[in-house]
Length: 273
Figure 1 (spheres, rainbow, N blue to C red):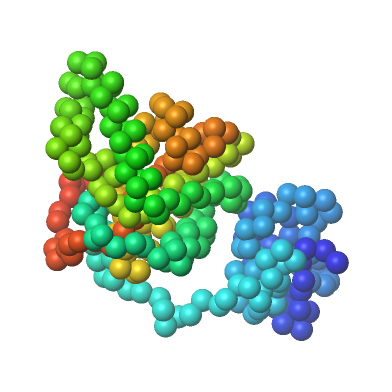
Figure 2: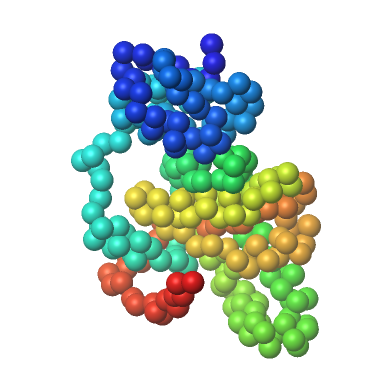
């Protein structure tokens, strides 16, 4: 049996699966039902387009069975206004409640994040989750120590004047690096993931947007990311293997504050070429 499993009675031979296949490996014989071209199985991306595009539930895939591909529920579609408000409501959270994030909620976040697109549908994004506040505090301290050395360079301070302020805030007893977040989620990809940084950024964006549905807030941990790129010791302390050059950390926790307005942003600069 090949990759495609066709219900001949349901198939209307409309060719949607043929036309929408990203690698053009499906054909529709003059007689019969859709099938994989000779040698085509080797280049199948396992993207599931063929299963998703069939309006008749006539096609299944050996590795993406229709039974595990739930139908789109029209009653759950959201309006343009709802999407706009949802996206504009997203804000970085830098003040978290002293409350542990349940691991089940973190699993839910990552489960949704795995549906983000990846280059060639490679799906090579992996995850490190830290939820011990003492360890997170230790990593924040290691980051500050690296920043202390960095700000000895006047050119760095001129380009990033907030860095000395960050160190001074830490010395005053405030975690200005990881914000006393109760959880740190790091998306990472191995060296062979050619589109690794883009892939994990998209995955984190899915996670970021879904967090509010679980009453959670997030903040992209840029200071730690910069330190991990330049300090193998800090990268190792955060649990990211040396063979994973693509990574980005995100703080996760229950927000201390709620937001009630949708502040404006700069007008976009658009060129239609």
